[in-house]
Length: 107
Image (cartoon, rainbow, N blue to C red; front, top):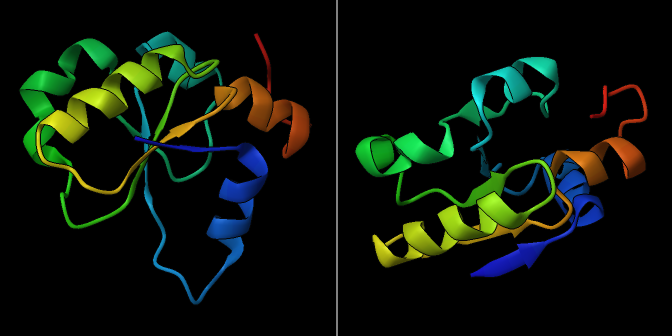
């Protein structure tokens, strides 16, 4: 599993010559409603095993949570399921809000 920091992700998302990743937010619904990175798909962590077929194996995936712990577990799970290009977002949405989008609500 690869790790990606928020600055690397912001650069990737801004690069029109590079296919965008699937941003997979695995936090709970109330957390996602409170704040999320624009364009993120929401599949709560506990539902990922049941919904993993919804995640395109041919597309890079960046898994996101609050600080990076839950997303790391989901990224490892996806790799075991055959996903080859999976990244864990270091620091999660909290780091994104602190370093990239200061207008994002934090908790």
